[in-house]
Image 1 (spheres, helix red, strand yellow):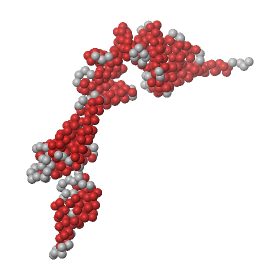
Image 2 (cartoon, one colour):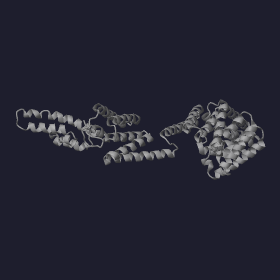
Image 3 (cartoon, rainbow, N blue to C red):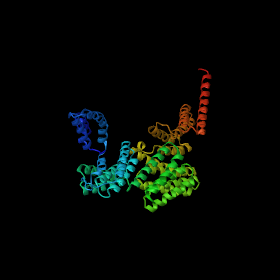
Amino acid sequence: MTASPRRPGLAFLLLGVGGFAGAHRFYLGSYLGGAAQLGLLLYGFSGLPGARLALLPLLPWLLFDIYWVHLRTRQPASALALAGARRRGPQGHAEGKDYDLAALADVNRLQASFVAAAEAQDWARAVAVAEQIVAGARRIFKGPHLNLAMSLCMLGQACHQLKAYDKARASLEECLAIGRRIGMPAEDMDIARNALALTRTAIAERKAQGAETDGEAVLLNLLEDKETRYRDALVQGDLPRAERLCAEAVATSRQLCGGPGKSVVFHLSSHAELCRRLQWNDKAEVAANEALAMAGELGLDDSWRRGPTNTLALLHAAAGRADEAEALYKKTIAMALAEARGGSSDGVVRAFNNLAFLYAESGQNDKAELCYARALVHLDKLREAGGDERGDAELHSHMLNNFASLLMARRDFDGARPLYDRSLAIQQASCRGISTAAANAHNDLGLMAQDDGDLRQALMHFKRTLLLNQICTPDHFSNIESAQRNIDSVSMVLAAVARAARMEPST
């Protein structure tokens, strides 16, 4: 059965109006079947003996033709070339050359599978089937042929859908080359040209994203997926899962770059920090050192070095190597200032905060206060530019809390309170005040209020601390118990004061 590019509506109309005369079959190219139906009709009305019996097969035949027309008109245009292979020669003209009919039948069966896969949008299967069709066409025709050109066009379009753009381009370019050689119909040439134009646009977009080949594009998409997933895990607080996905991202970026590369440096730096937070210090130090060495090998600027340098400083500080940590923190400050071009940024605030915290932990409070003051200056500059709203709210709050805690230890309550209030305002704008930073601020504000004798204010802060600890860190039982003890202590004092007030004689 041959395929046809004719319009289905007109074919069914001819079946209904002139079906007994075979009009639909002539229209769809089945000349033998049309002649047979017309012959039966003419013989049936000829008046010859037994002529009426010739009309009997016509009705069931026409009923079958309803399904036949449906099959005939639903085949893709490329099926016309495949089914017409028996009649067409290398130049697309009818000739008497014989082809392997069994191979042609196999190709026709494969084409039905291709159509089914394409309709199901199973493009991987569609490409596999199309490759078999092209291979069959090459074996059958052994040279340029309309059938081969249309099969290549079909393969190219399937590859485009699968985002195998290099293979799609090669198939479509070969299709057009064959088409120009054999004089392929203009309509089919336009289909191939449009598909090739779309493929070249997709290749240009792929190159703009940094992938030169289809293989690199697959790895790039995989890398983006890994990065998205480990960042989501980090937001959810699932550090082990984030570390595992980040390690996979490092491996994928190595495969993508084929050696040292910016992507490898970036993910190594992230992996080092995640390992540090998990207290896998040896693993974190190895990753950070490799990131720094690779950044030096690639000649990258300080913006690529600051992250792993800061991680190493934190590792040295945690190990009690204060001198090494201090030197690295000072490097991060210089890098952050250079990156901000002498201005202010979250990186600058973080660098000063880390060095100040190191000084405070080692008892060098004067140096710590100086560093916190410089961090506050940069934070003020960020606020003037809208940084409190757009910057790292958690960083800003923790820096303010650290500075306030240092002043509070010196009993400089007047200096500490505004810092805690500002920290709470930032958290309120960022997450409606539901955070561990807000809990710490409320706890210290409660302690200062208690020290000043403002017990009701202290009780309000301690209750807020308890609630936030229960929400944000329900597994930190010591914090919850401490907040509850503060509440109980202040409540007992308030109750005693209330009883004493009731026992006083009236005047």
